[in-house]
Each structure stands twice: as structure tokens, then as C-alpha cells.
Image 1 (cartoon, rainbow over the protein chains, first blue to last red):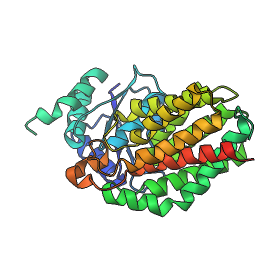
Image 2 (image 1 turned 60 degrees about the horizontal axis):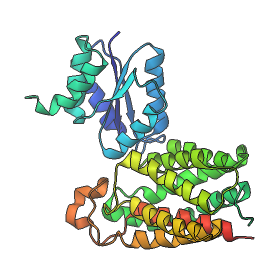
Image 3 (image 1 turned 180 degrees about the vertical axis):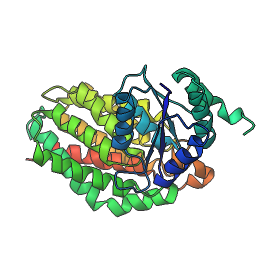
Length: 127
Length: 211
């Protein structure tokens, strides 16, 4: 089963837009957009991220999480303390390029480590 | 308040924190608008209102239980960086706290909180963050504990040092968090996270000194 991606952004729209863009090249990859606070305002929500990760884990996926800004990353790190580190990892990198690179890697059967590496290395891609 | 401090203190501290953060909501918003995303006052106010609602719903049985409840609630209700930062701080503090908190216990609680903040935010002193309030607070509390002072005295010393620490962030240039995007233009403003830290510690000291 392909590695799944959770896109965490301060903005609901940005998270959804990144999912829209990245899924274009990764039709078989499961995505969850976890953007905004509980109320949909700008910010990030532990519960939204944790809920998305739990759903994907329950479906049998391994999960890579991408973020937009520093405090989103802190929210993700808080979530990572609550889940199996072998099945869920943070994928650092530029959000848009990283999501596309990670999604394509997942689509062609890359494992969790490869997907994370793809996100990390994505700022070096021609684009 | 009894010394060492116990459950009644932790509850009083938390309720005072809610009232104080509600009172200073606009001030924290203004500080954060100057160098950040402007949500700190709103987030802390919303977070602590949710904390107090939970306290009423399911009262904790000891100090660690209060700190854990605050941690979990802030983590889930505070949208900005303060959620994971204070959430982790309270969670680590809960783990380091005994049933009765004496002056050495105050030091242990504060040190654990700062370790959590540093683990999460990776800031060091001088970067214009809440670390600049926590670090002198711990040093001050340590001084009191080593001199044989009470928990209340340790908290008062910590609170005073945190307030001074927060004020000392004004001339600093931010190199962590959203304010770092402003570079030199972050100079001349007090850090909102250091400010809310000073308020939280002042509330802890007030609760310890109260009847």
C-alpha cells in the first residue's frame, strides 16, 4: 500500500491547494489536508493533524507529514510523540515542491524513507 | 497558601492565569502584531478559557494532573506556536512534579518546562523568544532554593526575573519563529511569548502567596 501524505498548513485553502496539486501526479496516493485551526482560522490544529494521521494509519498506510511554517512543524512534532515512529515521519522541505516530490515517490512505490528523502531533496529539483 | 504547594495552588494558579491572560489579551495581540502573526493574545485567551472549562468538568486530583490537563488542552486549542510550546512545557513539568512542591520542586518544574520548550522550539537564549524569560526565572528560583527559601519565594523570584527577561527582549533581534522574517525590524519590540511567560509565572507566585 502506497505511503500516504498529510499536508499541514496554517491555511485551510493552502493545505487543500497543495493536495490538489500533488495528487495530480499521484492518483493512487491517499492525502489528507490538515490546514487551519479547529475553527478554520489561520493556525494549525493538533487534533486535525492527529486525526488525519490516525485515519491513515487505521487504513493501513505509512504516513509522511509535510508542513508550511515553523509552528506547523512544532504541532507535527507534538503529534509524532503520540504515534508509532516507524510508521509516521515528518518530511522536511519546501511544501509545494516537497509534496509533489513525495507524492510522485509514493505513487511509484517508494517506501516511507524514500518519500521523506524525496521531500527533503526537492528544492534541488529542476521543477 | 500552604508551603510546600499542592493541588489547591495548582488550581488557583491556573484560574489566575486564565483571568490574567483574558485581561492582557489585547496587549499580547498588539505585541504579536508588531513582530509576528498577531494571534498570541487570542490563542492564549482561548486556550486558558478551555482549560478552566475542563477543570470544572473533570477536576484533577493532584498538581501533575492539573499540569497535564493544561498541556493537553493548550496543545489542542491553541493554534499558534504557543500551543505546542506551552503544551510541551506543561507536559514535561507534569512529569517532573511530585505531589508536594517545595522550592526545589519549583526549580524542577521550571527546568522541565524549559527543557520541553527547547526540545520543541530549538531556541537558545538571546533569540528573542520565551526562552529569554524562562532561563533567568530558573536561575532566580535556584538561588532561592539553595538559600533555603520557600516555594512561594522561589516562584516570586522566578516571576520577577521572567518579567525582566521579557523586557530584555526589546533590544534583541529575533532569529527564531515568525519574527525572524523581520530581521533588524524586530528590534525595539518586546517578545509576546516571553511576555505571556512572565504573566504565567506571576500568577503562579500570586497563587502561592494567596491565603
